[in-house]
Amino acid sequence: QLQVVESGGGLVQPGGSLRLSCAPSGFTFDNYAIGWFRQAPGKGREGIACITTSGRNTNYLDSLKGRFTISRDNAKNTVYLQMNSLKPEDTAVYYCAADFSPLPRPCEFQEMKYEYWGQGTQVTVTS
Image (cartoon, rainbow, N blue to C red):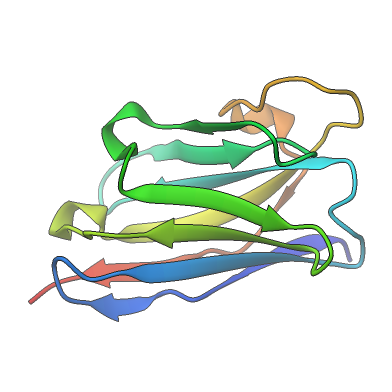
């Protein structure tokens, strides 16, 4: 079964940092743009960061620019989401998803473009 697997979530105090990881299961991230999404309690899922296949281009939810950084290590077949200066409102289930994108194009947050999704990892920011 082809899927992606997130890890690195947990409980953190406000102002703290976490790094989430996303890795494929049953395939490789070659030719896949990767997106991170999150769903806070009682809210819809939103796209927060994405990175193109090459890793040269990224896109972020405007409100998170400067605090969150997406990166990829193609040698390790892993994508990361570094989250700094975390706030209670960042509490959510964080999802990773893979979008088959063999030709160069910007990454997007349209969920329908993403073929493979993970089960999510919980991030809780609380004192």
